[in-house]
Length: 221
Image (cartoon, rainbow, N blue to C red):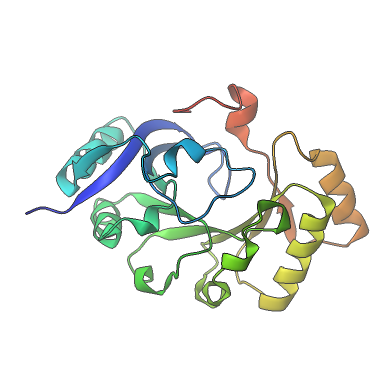
């Protein structure tokens, strides 16, 4: 019997953040998460009872084929936490084998080692104090990241920004580092001032483009 997956939604939009921000991408959002971040903007997809459709690998490949036929070359696996889906590596390998750039948005609380070498790139969160989830971070993941990967620090306070600086200095990930403000909790200008005063020249500020283009609470964008 073919492996199945819990797909909460899928849609084509722009990458709102990361190294391919502004480029079209197919988003495959999977249901279920092992964290409950205080400021989560996709909490509807995280619970055990999250709405979803059960799909097969063939179903996902067909969705990706249709997107590629429309000129889309990026696929983002997100959630929830996509790496919790059983046999998700098979999906990653299938999509990479189709010549697509596959990006995994992961929450930092799942070991990456089983997924290294599949051809996908990782955007890994590090949960800062305002999330109330920092204790679950798998810091051994930092050593597995490569220049094509990304570490994202979602910041809701000055304390968060300073903690991001500490973590980067301690683990020295060899990939771009992004500071992303929690929408409505901290102003981007405040983060810039902290970056200046703390000499954080190795970080990049990123804004979630989709929240400026569409309603911040809109789904499927």
